[in-house]
Length: 414
Length: 149
Image 1 (cartoon, helix red, strand yellow):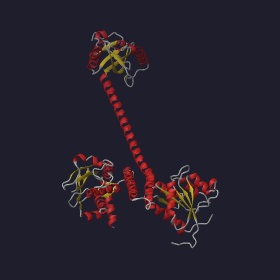
Image 2 (tube, helix red, strand yellow; image 1 turned 180 degrees about the horizontal axis):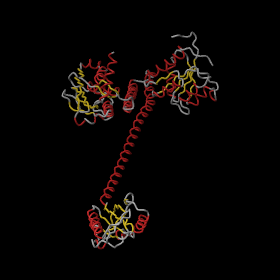
Image 3 (spheres, chains in turn purple, blue; image 1 turned 120 degrees about the vertical axis):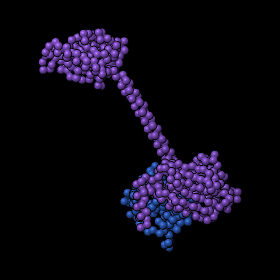
Image 4 (tube, chains in turn blue, red; image 1 turned 90 degrees about the vertical axis):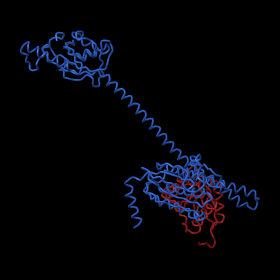
C-alpha cells in the first residue's frame, strides 16, 4: 500500500530479504495479515510515528489512513495522558521490549478524532527492523466490558448492602426476641414474690380474723384471694410462654404416645362428661416432647371445655402433606366463629365469660408459639363433627431420625 | 418423731430481707415441735456479722440452723453460703436455702458449695407454712446436730 510507508522487516538472526520482489511480497502478506486482524492495528516507529494502520483502526478512531500515517501516536492519546504515555513508550522501546498488554490493572484511555475518549485494551508487539524496533499495537474498545464491570460492581455493592441490611435486621430481631424472652422470664419470676405476699396475707387475714370480720368482709377477702390466684395463673402462663424454645432440644417422639398420655390427663373429665375421644394413627416426629404434649393437652382440654349440648366427641388425626404432617383436633362443641379465628390465638384473649368457660386465654397462644417454634403453623376451621377443627403442621422428621426411633422402640420392648 | 423430754430452745438465723416473709416464717414455726428463737439478718452482710458475732450481733447465739434467702441485698445469699461453708468454724451449721428461684443453675451451685438443703417457697399460704414447718421439724427435732466446733 503506497500510503503506508515501506516496511523492511528485519530477521532476528540478521538475515535480509533477498531482493525487491521478495520484499514486496513480504510487505503485501504483512499488510493482508494486519488488515484481516479482528482488532484495530497500528504500527509505530521507534519515535512514536505511525507508519501503518488498518481499516479497523480508521473505524475506531475516525481518522483516515492518510491522516494517521506520519502522525505521532499522541494523536490517539487524550491530552491528559500524553506525558505519561510518552514516558511509558520510551521505557518500552529502550528496555528490550516484550509482547505485553497495556490494560491489565492500568486504565488506559484512547481518543477519537472528535475528541471523545474510550477505555482501551492495548496489546503491544515489538517488531525488530533495520530502522529499529517498530511497535505493533492492537487496540480494542472495551467500553462495553468496562460498563459491564461497573454494573456488576454496582450490583455486587447493592447485594452486599442488602445482605448487611438483612443481617442487621436479623440480629436486631434476635436481640429483641431474646430481650423479650428474658423480660417475660424475669418479670414472671420477680412478680411471683409480691404476689405470694398478697395471696398469703389475704388468706392469713381471712383465717386469723374470721371471727372479727363479717360475711361481707370475708367475701371481699375471698375476691382478693381469687384475684391473686388468677394473677398467679397468668404469670405461670406467661412464664411457660416465655420458656418455649428455651428448654431441651427436639428428639424423635411418638406422636400417638404423646397424644394418648395427654388424653389420659382428662380421663376424669371424659368419664364425667360421657365424652368420646378417638386418637387415630399419629406419626413419629422430630419435636420437643414436653412442648408437643402441651399442644395436645391444650387442644384436647379446649375440646372438652367448649362443649355444646351433645355428649362431647373429640377426634385427633394426622395426614401427610408434602414435607409436613397436618394434625387436626376435631370436636362437636360450640366451635369458633370465623371472624374470631385469629383472635383465639392471641395471648390472654378470651371469647367467653369466665363464669361459663373458665380460663386465662393462654392455651392457644402457647400452642401457636410452640408450633411456630417447630416451624409449623396452627389455625382453626369449622369441623365436620360440628364444632371446631384445630389444625397444625409439623415438619416430617428427617430420614436418619427414624432409625434412631426404631432403636428406642427396641429398647422399650426389651 | 423423736421428742425430747424437755425441748431445748433452738436458734434459727433467718437471712431474709422481706419482713412479710419473716412474719410468715414466725407464724409457721409458732406451732413447730421445738421452741424456736430467731435472729434476723436483713441482708447478706448482716448475716455474716451475725455468724461472727460482730457489731449489733455481738450477743447473738450460734444458730442451730440457717434459713437463707438467695435474693438478699448487699451481699448475695450465694456469697453468704460460700463464705459460711468455706469457714472451718461455721461449716457444720446446717443451711437450708429458701428461695423463689428454681433455676437449675442456682440449685446446682448451692449444693456444690455445700448447702444442706434447697427448697422453693410455695406460693400458696398452706404450702408455704407446711414447707417451713417440715424443714424446721426435721432439722431441729429429728436430726442430730453437731456441737459447737
